[in-house]
Length: 233
Image (cartoon, rainbow, N blue to C red; front, side, top):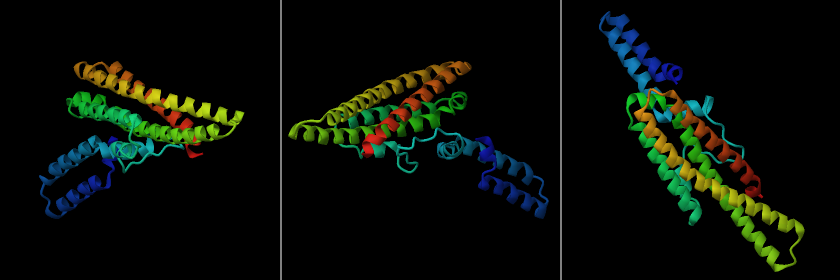
């Protein structure tokens, strides 16, 4: 992040402008002023969540699954509002509300805690996006299951239809369990952040938080891939 912030064009331009003015006026005080301004810009850029997502999403951030619909322009909260009204949407919105509180807990903590938890922010964003992906796949699978259920009820059900319906129901149940589990896990993450802020000198706590987020992202990504083929069909 520091390297990307240091090489950010607007920040480098500040150095060039300062050096150019100094070469013209030979005012010695411009050098420390330019340096302090440049360092401040680099620091602010490195702490900017939008800049972090852009850099980490391109170079180091968790990769989206092939079937996932991850948008950097549309927030997960807005995407959740596109879900059909019902229990799934309510659970997702409740989980996203906790997700926002977890982010706020990081952003309002002291400088040391924010530095320790810097890597957790892009992981949280990825988890929120993938949670909505799973919910979207779940709703598509539920729609297909309803149609398939009406078909099997209208005529003699075939073994293939019954197997397809059972598979869909298993995937829907897995999605429901993961959505509910994500809500609880985000609550646990919020409690972990409070403990980290109290004991910020202990790196093991931050590592445990990042490990939990990586595990959550891996499960959500695997489930979104599982839901995607049936959702598309």
